[in-house]
Image (tube, rainbow, N blue to C red; front, side, top):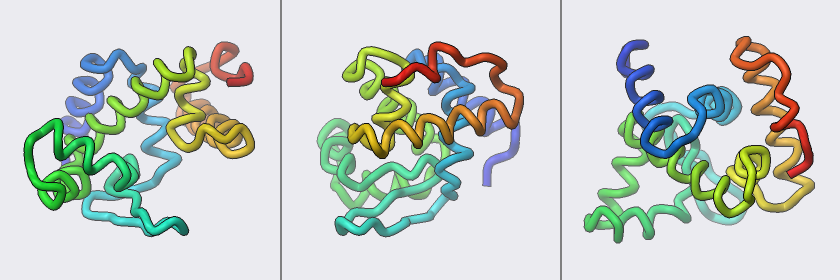
Length: 144
């Protein structure tokens, strides 16, 4: 279990490394509700891993990038909170780049399907509002 200080260091390091607002990372962490060592099954046979619920579809790519076995990559993503947050921030950056906007990237973190991604984006925004991380997210409320 990470201390609050260690968690903050992980979040801010990931935010700075991948140029993702730390408030968005916190919003995603809240919405995903994952925990270290958690593996949540999906209906398509994949699993969502750790605090940011990283889908196992990413494991082969991470394994190749890190030059480790898929078993090792899965374990790192599932069991290391800081690694999981870093990977989540990298995925967010990837999705932001693909979507062309922060709002779209947040939606696509969950799903590129408009009927699924849009409501997810609103959940993240509501979490950010609840914890007073944002006031008026006009740029994030706009349709992705």
